Length: 459
Image 1 (spheres, rainbow, N blue to C red):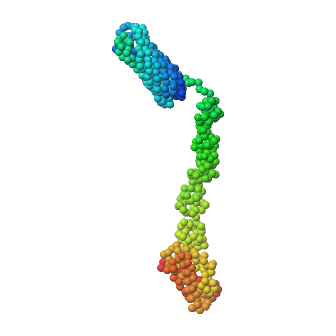
Image 2: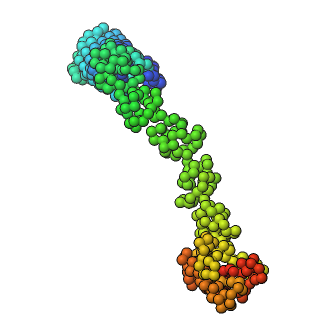
Image 3: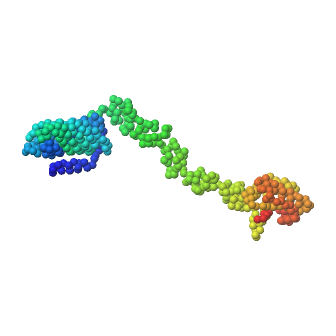
């Protein structure tokens, strides 16, 4: 029993050894030679033999990496349990094994076959048995493996003197070493695993994958063979480097064939098109954008900030009166401030630059620009109502001056209405020469008195 325990312990220890590289068997090995030690237990009633150690050898030929034909020979020296004699047991076996792939090698196996068991010494007879095996080839290198096996032999009619023709059973475990050999391979000059006799492309570069003809494959047609191509799947037509990867001239991570901004400066973050990032989508890249949170749809200047076309300090997106660069002051929406407050009262707005033809109520073309700014401001502030007041100097009769001042006020009102001001917001008055702002005894004073004013109503 101590011997049996030692064998079983050795078997368990070997089973737990770390494995090495897959054996040659898993790569198409064709022959196996091995030696082993075995421990056998015999049917105690019918065979009357002590359990004992033996040695053996095996040879196998692999039909495929998974299937093999095997022959074994072993010898075990034991003793009879009914007489003080030694008995030598010789086994010759033949069978078929099927292997399963584990960890990259065809390791675990099972199989069966036929055995001839010859006994000599104290007794002499021969039994014919069927055997079944299970085991594991533990790879140690490309050519060597530790082989551990359990074996059961069934003899339907034993010739042992103690069996009287009855069936008998033997159980054995073994452990040993095996060496694997491959058939001499055909010549393969370029090492692509296609024999020269069948290789239509005999100078394939090392590492390139080939088809059944031995010719290199290039599935993405970039001129770099598979196996050497570090970027398989390159789009057709894209320029590639020596490793088969798409060219990226500006090193921004976007290949040239898909880069819409092929000369991006080094270090800039880019989008999927290879263009510098523009977080607010205003057309100015983030690295140049001084206003990085511009709302969508707003026109911006070269710095990425909302544009102020008329330079009045109110950006175009908020400016209700574009083109008011000549206005001295504008309000929060970019419109001219028409009425200034002085000592708690709104000062009338004198329409500077609004002139008429001599002694007529016809606006000169030069007046339109000033009135356009006034109209824009009134449209932007629909709550405002104004009086359009006309004034003259004292030359002429009072009746003539009153009529002329009213006509000129009407002309201004009509122009403002034509520019979008609601008519109900405009009241006209003609004051003639009754409200001078300067003396009428000289040309300068009379020029100041000839004017049109806007007066705020109700606000």
